[in-house]
Image 1 (cartoon, one colour):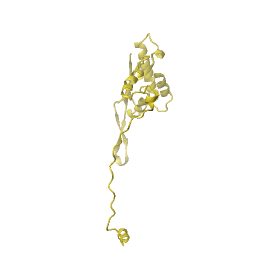
Image 2 (cartoon, helix red, strand yellow):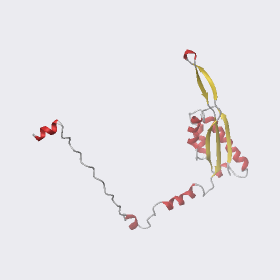
Image 3 (spheres, one colour):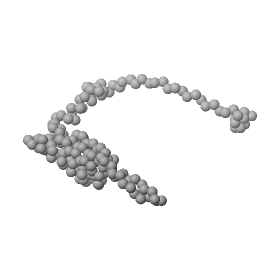
Image 4 (spheres, one colour):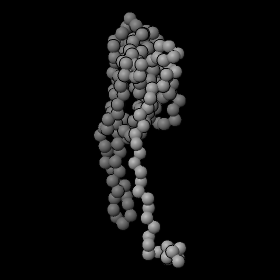
Amino acid sequence: MEAIAKLRNHPTSPRKMRLLADLIRKMDVDQALNTLHFHPKHPSGPLEKLLLSAIDNWKQKNPDQRVEDAGLYVKVIYVDGGRTLKRMRPAPQGRGYRVRKRSNHVTVIVDSRERGLGLEMAAPAEAEKAAPVPETEEEALEVSPVEETPRKKKPAKKKPEGSQKAQKNKS
């Protein structure tokens, strides 16, 4: 069962926050917390707190399960733009430059990976699309013939007749 946590109107540009969100997407919760805790970018602190909040929300929904046994991972994380505060900055010759102070909204969804399910379930579907696996050594050593496509020949370059070198060579 999944749990959601949201961070609203955090005063960081969405582009900077997305760098960290992309870093922890589909990551196990323990690994994501360690990554955020030791990351040098300034939005890593609030994002770490948000992830801890999502874990606590999951605990509230699943009181009979332990976090360590559930195999929690960051299922979905996305960053949307929040409100933009517009300010004026003095500029030369009596003008003013507009400063946009951006903010963002972050949504995190954590979910538990069922033991024996999850990523292992996707592997057989992909295996069907791949080439068949040879069963014996003889089949493995056989090489399937490769059809060669005929190459087009490029036309030869003609030498210009009016050049001085061409005229000297003729005489």
